[in-house]
Structures are given as C-alpha cells and as structure tokens.
Amino acid sequence: MRNMMNNIIENIGSLYQPVKALLVYKGTGQSGSCYVEAYGMDENGSPINAHPLSLAEGTALAKSLDTSGDLKRSFLKPRGLMPENILYINPDLNGNAIWFTPAMERKLFFVEGLDIPNGSAKVPPLIWKATKDRLCIYAFKSKSKPDIGTELYHAPFLNMYRSGKVCMGTVKVKIKDDCMLEDFIEQWQQYFFNSYFSHSIDGHNPVKGNICQLWRESIEDKRKIPFKSLLKTTLTLKNIL
Image (cartoon, rainbow, N blue to C red):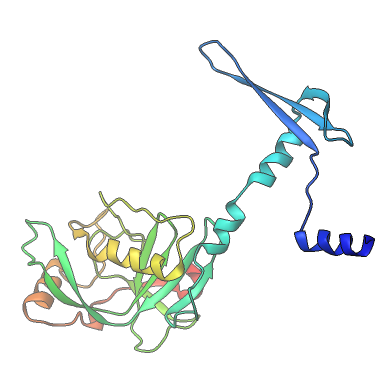
C-alpha cells in the first residue's frame, strides 16, 4: 500500500508547501503609500512571526516573479533554421541583430520639395544592425555574404547620421520584448522602406555627388546606384559586432 501511495504521489507531480504570506496595507491619505507585512509559516501552514517585509525578502520575491528570462528566450529566437542572411545575434532583452540584404529593388518614398518621384529603385547591398528602438544601416560592395573583414560604406540614403544611425523621424517603432527573429527583421525593413526620406542630417552627404540627383535618376531611368558613388567609412563588419 505504501509503495502504491508513493507511486501515486510521484505521478501527481511536485508538491508545494506554503513558506511565506504577505499582507499589504494601503494608506488612507492622499499619498496612497503601501506597507507590506510578511509572515512565516509553521508546519501546519499557519502564519507566524509577523514582521515588515525586509529588503532581502523583497529582492527574493522580485526575482521569483521576474518573467524577463522567459521573454529573453523568445526575443530574436528563430522559428526554425537560422536565416541565411543573419550575421550576428545578441538575444538579451537589450540586445541586437545584424543581418544583410543583397542588392534589390524597393519602392521608396520622398517628401515633396525634393523633386524626387516616389517609385521603385535599385538599392545596393546593405548591412543592418538593430535593437528594439535603434537602427543603423551600412552599404557594402560584395555580391557574396559579408565576412568579419567586409568594409562598410555609408548607406546612400537621406535621414542618415554619419555614424550609420537612421533618423526615424515621426515613425513609431514598436518592437515587442518577445519578438521572434524573422518578425524583427521584417518589421525593421518595413519601418525603414515605408518611411519618407526627407533631409540630410548635420550636413552629412553619404555619397559622392548630389544624393537627390542620384535617386532621381535611379527611379526615373531605372538605374542602380553605382558602387563608385558610395563613400567608405573607417569601419569593417567586425567593428559593429
């Protein structure tokens, strides 16, 4: 009979014993401050030894309730095999991903006054680095997958800082803490390409020549941005990992 009971208990799963109880008091004044009283538990599960919740107890409670570890396991996690265009991942909650896109054709949007029509343009190969709230983009010249020594060029777009950071303007970026890798990449690329290019920042011209003329010709004449127009930075891929 005892062996049967032991087997039943094992099949039920883990048993949990009460070890602490908390009683929260809220002040009646305008401040609405709170006071937490902690109780230990005797062997019968009855509360004993009432005392103010200590700093150590509060810290232990916060750790036990912290779900950031679960969120971190989902953030930047691929749904299946790692996408081939991924170069680097730091899956911490404040981490980042680096990926590349080959030369492609995308529709671009420009504010009125630049004399650049909205339309499809041939975009050079790009390297993207993003956190949940910040995006940097660089160009590169190789047709193959970048490696650690790949030289980075300024991305030939308006709304770019000299450092490679993108000014998102009024775009409201909303990347969730548990965002999967494929969604993270897709959302950032949609944010970037669906925004309106409007101005140079701090006098930064990311190309050789007139950037507005370059994009006007690219859209109107279906020309790709020539590699000779790209300006080299002092960085390689290794420098942005």
